[in-house]
Image 1 (cartoon, rainbow, N blue to C red):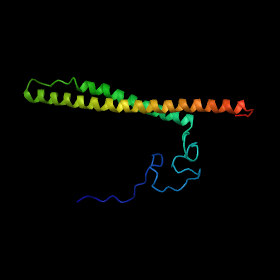
Image 2: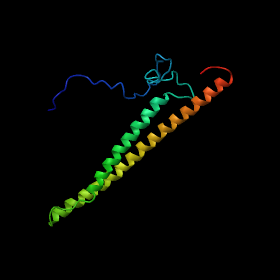
Image 3: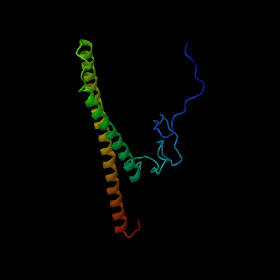
Image 4: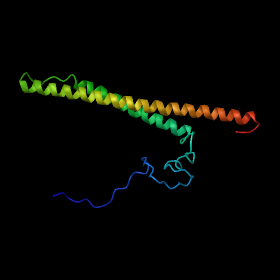
Length: 149
């Protein structure tokens, strides 16, 4: 019989939680949970940025670091693909064959994950660049009309 573990589970507040069907506005007036956290831009009601340039840069760096970890793990998976049996008997050769097969499947999976993480890093990096371009354009436009930015 399974042993009951008493207590309750609480989600980590740093993890994204999807918005409910009929969301209540948060403190900033927006309906997305992260809009009022860490420099969010308020209501998410159309084109614009929900993150600032610094946050986008940190997210791109995080995805890049994760991609690098998958890249390093891929090097280790290649070692599995070179496994040889410990002896000349049938069981040893069969075991090595299974290890090589597992290494190949692991390598394919790790490379897919690495590509996904790199794609995400590139997207956040591109978004950060677009943010900077939009910021420069807004600054130029405000100054053109004699304002200060």
